[in-house]
Length: 295
Image 1: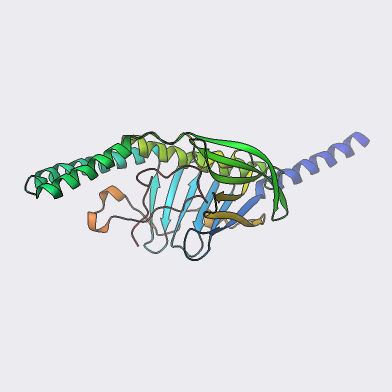
Image 2: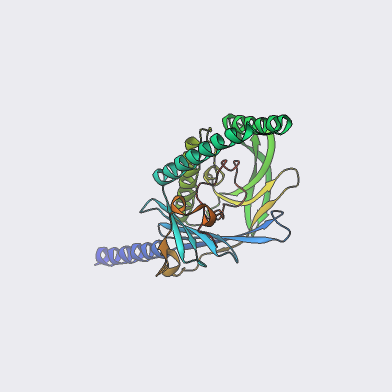
């Protein structure tokens, strides 16, 4: 009897724990200072195997679906969305490079009839642009320090991000279990996927991908603050919510249509980038990994 009673209690406890894990959601709100004249907020919401990220007040947000290995960029104003995978970005950037090469050929034809001083100035700009594309990205590393701080009631340890041994950013990371392990894993998965897309974009353009991306900031825990040095822009966690989030917020909105950037006429091609992670650790690729539908 005692055995049956204890078994039932154990099963009940396991069931409750399983339900808690299944329903565990996370909402991270970062206040971004110094990126624009006014402070802005970036919200990252994690629900199961999906992550939604966007700037408060913007018509555009990103939605990462880990089960489908797909990144969507959604524009609520035009009711369109872009699907992005490593294969898709490779195809898009290959087309972009082809267009750039065509443009260069046209420019060379026009340069023949230019005054010598204008022609030399333009040739120099083209050479500088091509050299910049081939320049290897800086070596990036994170060094832990002994400094600690408390942000939103959570203790975090500061690490310094260095590029070619120059300190460029301080990151305060909490690894005290401030969010569910499954949600943290999903957050890292999204950033790793975005880093993969950025790398494919760089390769398609003939440039070297960064050695580290945004994911490196979050692998050891939750980044509570990212501060550019010496006193540059800052992203700091201003709230952490664990309430259940609406399922509908993590699905493609009904009635929205897919948009393919490379199929759009040049005059209507989208120019907005998808929401970026707060203060990425690595420089952005020469061209954004995916553009958002035109407003």
